[in-house]
Length: 378
Image 1 (cartoon, one colour):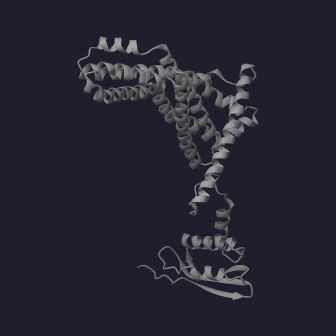
Image 2 (cartoon, helix red, strand yellow):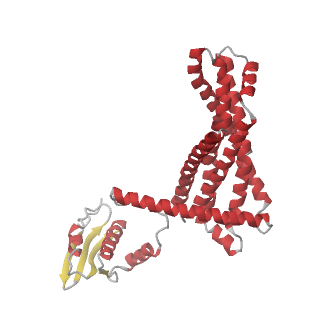
Image 3 (spheres, helix red, strand yellow):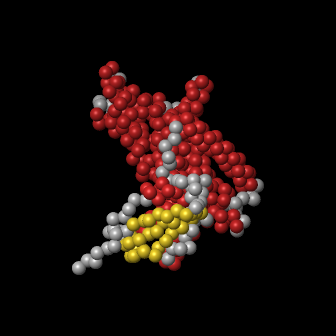
């Protein structure tokens, strides 16, 4: 037979500037607790300077009482009221000391109060300015590390460089193959719809070859590597930051940039042009699958038309663009990883920010380099 619980209540008593909150009854999860509205309203009284608790009538209690007490203590501190917990039972005091002994993790997500659009715009502008400063400073430190590497004074392990080569190059071939093949198929289908109206299906080879070699091959490879490798860089360095491994390296006399960032940057710069060339070839092969199988064009005709349409400068333009993309991907991923906070949520934020930053940089760089090439007649 279930025992009947004593109803719980809070009785308030104010003497001069002290407010006494007397808890009575059983404060357990199954109880019907009274709202704290009256207590909070009394705390808003300007005459209240001190809050004390009386627990003589308290019966059974569990985490429900702890939750309500923590809420009262926090609300009292927000109002500048001195909260005296010495009258609480020893068990409650011990639990409260544990609650307030652990600091809030840095980078923890909190529900932000709604703000006006002008404040949001101003905050975004300040964050953009600070990110710009951090990015320029990061580039400067990285340049100094490169100079130290050329002078033989940077601590860079060859094994780290070759491991990053493996991760950035051969390990990325399956996804590069799939996406590039599909992009070549899509380009061929889209162009064929219009070219078939004039009986000019043979020019599908020109469109696919030029599109893949000059822009699409390198661009798609860069977007894939941003989501794959840039996010990986941010997650790896962010986890090291959260676990204080980077601080340990500094304590042992290792500079983080030459030891952690340079191998990733150099590996991505070396592999991106090769991945771009591979993506171009696979994309052209994808266009050949559509042209040969759906139109009256032989594979030999497609290859000859592609060879006559594409020149060395077309491949060179795509390779140069992709090398620039590699620098931007490595910078965005490593920068966000080094800026990461000390919590799991901060690592996730750094990874997301690295992908977004990398894609934005790639699109802007592609637009700028395309305009430059157009003005130069390349």
